[in-house]
Image: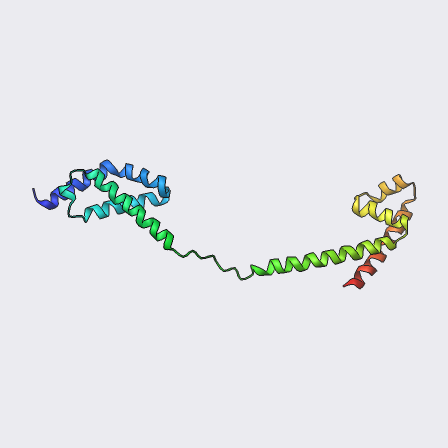
Amino acid sequence: MSRTVGRRRTLDALYREERAGLIAYFARRVGPERARDLAQDVFLRAATSKQLTELVNPAGFLRRIAFNLLVDEARRQKCRIRTQPLLENADAPSRAAQEDAVHVREARHVLEVALAELPQKTARIFAMNRIEKKSYRQIHLELGIALPTVDYHMMKALAHLRQALGHSR
């Protein structure tokens, strides 16, 4: 039997006997996605080895190749430069968010001052409608005032707030 046929038979037998074990070995260490590729690399290296037909422990030889592949893989990972994708507008939202927060604080302050300037009854009706989310009818029933009066106070409050907030811009 020629040396090439003997090598092929040895490699075929090793492949059938050891492939699943190598894949499991790699899967535990590098994950199932990469395991099959590394197992294939083990057999590729074994196929090119001059020692293949003279081995006393072929399975141990494959495990040594597998271990060396993991060492090589770890070195590559360590040396690999990791990059982050450049997001053109990554800074824009944070800058805008900061500006928005300043504008919200300013608007809130102007609103509080403007609400404090309203007559107490008008401010109460506005708060019941816009903050407590009560309908005009609920306000009318709760305060015992006519619906047109609720409407009048809301129009008065909204006009005052529109003017106050319009001047703050």
